[in-house]
Image (cartoon, rainbow, N blue to C red; front, side, top):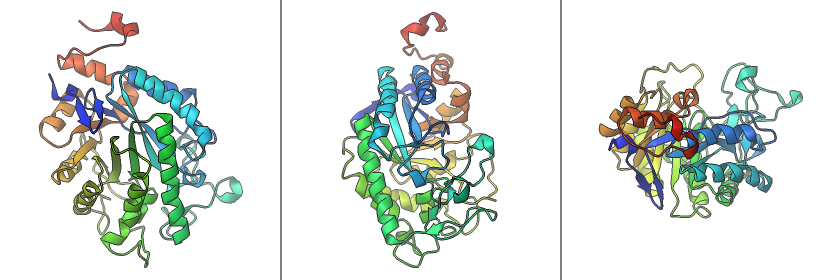
Amino acid sequence: MSVLFTPLSIKSVTLKNRIVVSPMCQYSAENGYANDWHLVHLGSRAVGGAGLIIMEANAVSPEGRITPGDLGIWSDDHIPGLKRIVDFVHQQGSVCGIQLAHAGRKASHTVPWLGGTQIPPEAGGWLTVAPSAIAFKEDELAPAAMDERDIAKVAADFTAAAKRALLAGFRVLEIHAAHGYLLNEFLSPLSNHRKDKYGGSFENRTRLLIEVIDAIKTVWPPELPLLVRISATEWTTDGWSVDDSVKLAGKLKERGIDLVDCSSGGNVFHAQIPLAPGYQVHLASAVRKTGIMTGAVGLITDAQQAVAVLEDGHADLVFLAREILRNPYFPLMAAHELGVDVKWPDQYLRAKPR
């Protein structure tokens, strides 16, 4: 049996293999509601055999959306549409997770295929918020610096969203603290210039993330996995570093986080990121040395490469993004390539390679 198809148990949840569909925004919702696109998109990856499917970033508040097309989980009315997708994914033998997010200063933009530009309030956008009044790009409006009441609302919004996620049937929850969104903005000394208890020192800059985790744990069952996605480096001097991520991982482990999903970048517009196959795997490896489980992501595109990540001890799970957009059936075909006999959907048995 290839390690890629070895089950992994995290608390009460057992994944049938080590392949994860990474949360990838589809920008196809209206007022936060999931629709047929999301059902088909995630459903096809479940049919394709992934062990864990993490739904794209669900905004915990309307102002936390990257674009008007983001999925949302700030209202109980969002639950039925999400549950429809969760139920289908679970029927296929995959586990369905959700990523909870707040976009911070990167909110209020058009969808990528319309340019991804900032939408000012007078054009139908909304005022963005951040730890400090520092714009992501020079040509954008600066966000409003949050006061402590704003910060408390964020923790409350994440908690309410986690409660809704549980009602919708999700069995894994991931907190989005990466890619330059709000929690990442608090972590980074480049975007967080605060002088209060939420800024300055490492302890202060990590405070909001820890408060969000602690708040979520009051409603998220202890037997269900809780993950955090981080940008393990900002790829720039004086920014958040791999050493910071290793230090944070220790705090996350103490707080009961089960796995760190190790991505990178997104908070510095001009960062030079050395894109190459598996370019972020070393980040997962460094974090894993703290004793916490990790997920590796970033230009992992074939079965042998995924196997090597696991066999070499860099990560416990392999997160696929663009490759599984290209090929929803990557897990089924990877199993065939590796000589592993996995169950195919009955409806597709006639196409199973022999």
